[in-house]
Amino acid sequence: MNRFEYIRPRSVAEAVAAAAIPGSAYLAAGTNLLDLMKIGVARPGRLIDLNHLPGLDAIETLPGGAVRIGAQVRNAELAHDPEFARRFPAVAEALLSGASAQLRNAATVGGNLMQRTRCAWFQDTASACNRREPGTGCDALGGENRMHAVLGWSEHCIATHPSDFCVPLVALDAVVEIEGAGGRRDIPLADFHLLPGTTPERESVLAPGELVIAVRLPAEAAGFAAHARYAKLRERTSYAFAVVSAAAGLRIANGRIVEARLALGGVAAKPWRAEAAEASLAGAAPDADAFRRAAEIAMAEAKPSGDNAFKIELARRIAIRALTQAAAGTPDRLPALPASSFASNAGAPNMGGLHV
Image (cartoon, rainbow, N blue to C red; front, side):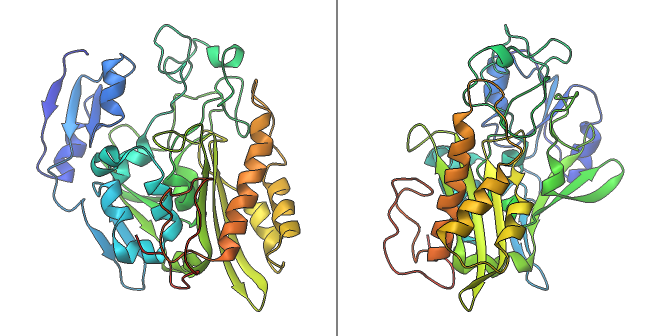
């Protein structure tokens, strides 16, 4: 690990001012950043510690029913907040399916949005990686790439975004609050992360020095609480990133789907909102045929980026599974293995959302 300067600002304004110096990086829990520093992928000249900043660690219900989650709220704290889990059960399930209990106790909401890809070629400084060093090439294209992108990739980068949390957030129209030298701005999470194109080193819309300070969920997102699930397929049941995942939310009335939400994880460099698939479900009966059709639409533009054609069919199946589970109703209690294919839905559906 290289030498660095350590800064502990007293306010968000001080933090943003300190980050104006090139080579700066924000430090939250460090569950991703410190690992990257240890292997030489990240080499910041100064770390700006956000852990003592006031006002970033609250979960607030705003007038009108929206929820504002401070960037320093810990993943476990948010997932285990009873009111939040009741209103946004798929988000709680996604959070509890990620990492380990120890990491969830440390990791933050803002850090989750900002985590870097787990592409092995990105993490190997001896390999060519346009995301790590622009213009050097992409060794993943000709290497071991079964876990890589099948949507939105380019010849410059085929990495995927690793977050579970972001998948239901993007399905529910979450908004990211950003503070920078030019003031505060809001960005829909769907637009926050960038596809690689010709500039894979640009992973988000953040300008240098800008800081994520909160995430907001609109009041309308709670309308899916009775029929909302997150499903995750991984190579082992715990402490593993998704091969593919899906978040589904349905509003059902009189035996028909009034509105649907569907997003996929593990398939692209950003959480993938499947809006055309959602539209196909409006007015349909919540049955296998409708879900199969929606999954086909969701993956219609998918193509392998290497030895990963199997991910396209897996993504279809995980979408169908999430939609089927959502249609059955949010369970009264979160399964012992959240989001797992091995989880059982014990208990009757709870029309008010799950308890943790």
